[in-house]
Picture 1 (cartoon, one colour):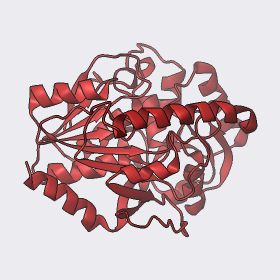
Picture 2: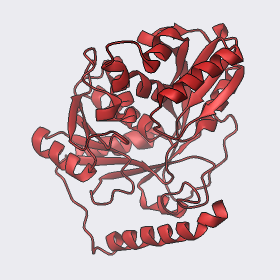
Picture 3: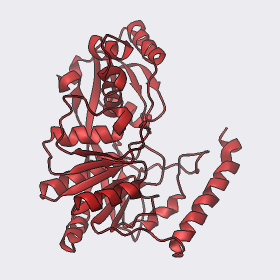
Picture 4: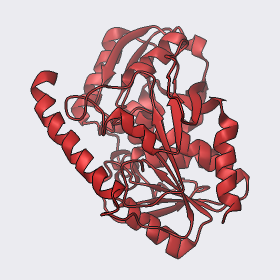
Length: 353
């Protein structure tokens, strides 16, 4: 199948090359905004850890009492309007859901809110330049952080960060996952290598470029109302996920010595159908598992679906959430080396305001 798609990947590669040429040669101009702009992006489609790294940067800025706006596309949401939410917002009345905000944006908001990090804004819009311009004009923040901005060259950025995994794909979309050639990471100001849960990560040799090395840290297993489940209480699990790199999730569960009865994979950002959830619950019963496990992003997408929030009676979504032992893994990104370079770059931006 991959061989069949290679001609299309070559066409895609040419399109990316031509577009970058127009910007590199100055024929296309990037829009310059008054606030300082930090872009966090990647080379491949999904699974590199952009949003956790955006969370890390945003937390750093808020703790330094800086007024920061995070701009996100809100991937796969059903509306194209611009949505503005305070970072300390508590969603008790469920005004926000995955349909109007997107799963990653909502997860970012929940993590910032649960950490008590007020004083910032999350702006969600399909057009990142339009959303950033709106935020800059209306709210006048000190700094704007763009989630997934590396390919969004319409907007000038003062600090361009690109995240890659040690074992990056070698083929362009659609034969592979690369959004542009891997060598294009040199366009960035800073390279972040996310080793995720690897014990013996590949040694990336990216000379003549500042690098920050990160990985994920396991923070626990949570359930409804953020209840904590001890790992040792899990005898075995039926597992499902719809994320960019499901293998990293499986690796975490293996590291935790959790017996996996069945591992069910859906596409990234997948909205579950009633039939899929019914099949999941049936698999759980058939497997004789003690629990159902998923990722935080998948849990947020399920818990905050309109099918749950606006349902006046029980349905398949609510049945899984409230009548089955469904839990999610909570992880956080941490910096292993060269973090001082990242924060020095950010501090220099703030000084130059």
